[in-house]
Each structure stands twice: as structure tokens, then as C-alpha cells.
Length: 330
Image (tube, rainbow, N blue to C red; front, side):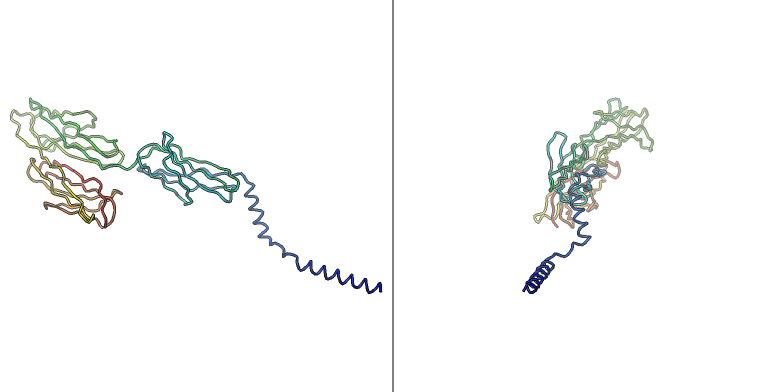
């Protein structure tokens, strides 16, 4: 009887042992174990961000920021906050691209802050570009018609500084005087309201006036035409004048129609050039025309500005006007 009872208990133990073995989980692989350890180690590290890398474009209109390298965090966000010098927040956004570009909406001094936040621990690390002087969208350079006069003793030509509009506002004005034999008389840069040229001998003289935008590189050139100095009877001369530009956008929004401007004075031999730019500064169309009305039709949708330049081929006087920026569709 006792032997039979012991056999039953032994069988029960074997059965229970077998059940336990059946329920045991398979061992975790070494690779899985190492991954778990590395993840936990990463969570235990302190959050840190590598020094920020950025580049200001050559025209100072935008700054390119490389997404920073992050240490000590598995899950995190990257926020960009742009401030003006007066402390105003201009833009705030999250981004995960390898490179983020900020373009200034207006000219000013800006600082881009990049904030990395560990979403598991709440820890943050901040980097910034420092203060950057940037340039916003710029209207085309526009220069008023040159004005000059001859002194009563016929010895000097006085040229007034032209009115300058648009552009970056940072410009210089150059004046160069020649005689009609191709001889150089004088040249200078000046911010004065007017400049004088006194050649000291009799002849015909011309002064070229060139305005250059130091930031955008745009230039605008014109001249006084030929003027007799040094004699008692200077030859009468009527400077070339150009009427106000007239234009309209077509009803379908695809073209700018431009009327040939009225031209008076000068030698009477003038040519008219038409130049169409897109808002990236690219030349889209360029041609000369004697037509009363021309159409400028780009083959793309965008914002465009047409420049009309009248040039006297004898006196080399010129005048440029533009339509301003117009939105056109393809």
C-alpha cells in the first residue's frame, strides 16, 4: 500500500514539473537584451545638443539652419523661434527637416533660437544663431530724371543729385564728365545736393550720373546730354524728356500691356527697350520695339515687373520707368 502511494506522488510531481516546463517562456535573444539596455541608457543620459550650424545667404535675405545633432534623448521635438531685435517674436514653428530656411519679411536684425525638448523627461536645450542683420523684400531701384543748369558766365555745369526711390536705401551716386573729343574732365562720388564741373576751356561737355545700390547691385545711369561751355553763345539744347509710363494688366491676367511713352527733346533719335523680370531677379523677356503698344506675356505664373528704357542714340541720354510688381498667371 505504501509503495503504491509513493508511486502516485512521484507521478504527480513529474506531471507538475512537466507543466511548469511547458509554461516557461523562451529566453530573450542577446540582441534584444542589448537594445533594451541601450535604450534605458539613453534615457538615463542628460540631454545635450551639438553647436548650431547655420549660414547667412550672400544677399542677407535668408538664413539656412542645419537641424542640430541631439544626444541623450530618444524622443524629442525641435522648435524654431525667430525674434527681432526689439524682442518681438516673428515666427515660431516645429520642424524635422535636415535644413530649415528663414527668410526675412522686412529688413532688420534677427536671432533664430532652436529649442530641443526631450518629450520623455521634459528636459530642454537651446541654441541660437546670434543677432543677424537681414534684408527683406526690396522694391526695384527707381531714379528721378537728372536736372542741371549752366552758369551765367558759361563756365560751369551744375548737376543736381537725382531723387532715388526703392532699392535697399544704401546707394552711391557717381558723376563723370567728358568733352566731345573723348577727353576725361573729372569724376567723383558725392552725396551733396549738387556738384559742379568747370572744365576751364571751351567745348561741348557731358556729365554721366550713375546711381548704384550697394546691397542689390542695381544700377541706373543717365546723362546731361552735350552742353557748350566757355563760349559766349552756347548752342541751345533741349534735354530729352519722357512721358509717364502707361500700362495695364490684361483681363485674363496673363499679360502686361505697355504703351510706348511720349518722347520729346534730345536728338529725336531714340530707341525703346522692354525688360521683364520675375520676383527672383531673373530676366524673363527682353526686346526693343517701335510699336505703339506691346504685350509682355511670361510663360509662367508669378509676380513680374516690366522696365521700359528710352535711350537717345546720339546724346546717350536715357530714362527708365517700370510697372511695379504685377501678379500674372500662365
